[in-house]
Image (cartoon, rainbow, N blue to C red; front, side, top):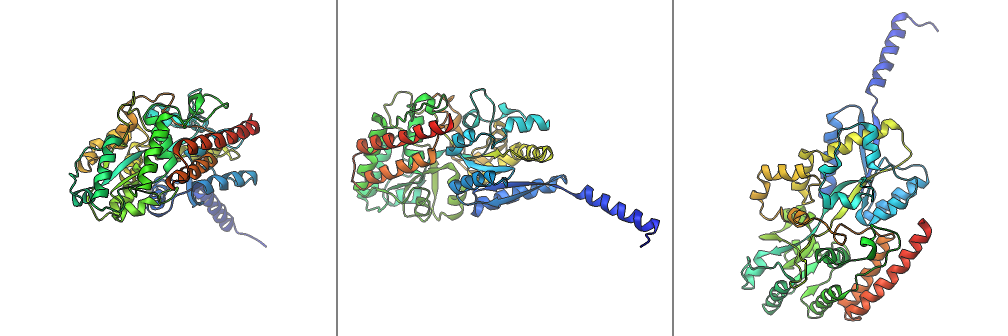
Length: 436
């Protein structure tokens, strides 16, 4: 078969054009559905449209635990994504996964992007930083617990909706008044271990575990069965038995009860803002997480929940260049400010928080800056910079089981927390043996 010079030239030009149009694919696995999933899709679409060298594709892989397990299984099969969302309790697991990750500080340095790790809020950055001060993963959706208040419910019970509730003693008084007025759900909660033990400990500057909550070494012992933790859980157990605290589940099942107007008070993530604003048919407030008055040093600072983005090992240099560009985009003040304002997640950089303030968002939406203030008013201590434990997801399950025994009246707070510590320490020893 003969080809004319024109045909050959046209073919070469076409192939060259296709090569120029080819984009490096970046896979991003996450745990978001609903409104959060839509917002992530919008971020990705915006990034993809902003340049033509890379194309990020998002895939939902289930809840946080399922997404982590999917990433681990994919790495073992050699099919891992470039970017994996991992919730904060999976941090130690990812750090111990030898050869599975490429630290973010290496990704950014090798790509030569304009990146300053000191631009990130200390209480957020510290959770994902090693003892050498190097960032291992990129903070993404970071939240902290707050107290949500149904103002209409308080007013209906004859309580001033502006009544002070900065301490648990004050909250107890309001709960009693609500119950006396016939309210069927004075208070409920989401994420009971995260809020009522992990953050309780940090906020009162007492250890959840030894070795700086696991940041300083493997040989960690759980310590959340101290006097203050027992006092708090015992009080909640009493409220549960009196019908003043409604327990609805281990994750965020209580969110539906609060958004539907059934519960007056709700301890939940600051990231509940998007759903509450969209669904609540009542006036609501966001208040600081209460603390126990009389505890020296309280309130300290709360700690984050949510997840960070880990870069998986085993990809080409060009893929990592694209990852660096995408993570830089996500960290930009404009993108972070919008994410913070849309979701209630913390702005992960100082610049994003300042931009949000300059845009007038906090003035127009009172209380939306409480989470930021709560996290940044004091420098984190060894007890309040976070928790980094092996098998933490499984330890939380143990804590959930023991707390449920308190809410049902089957165990005392002391017995339940002692048992949770003993069972959890067994898992820590197994994790040590497997990863030393």
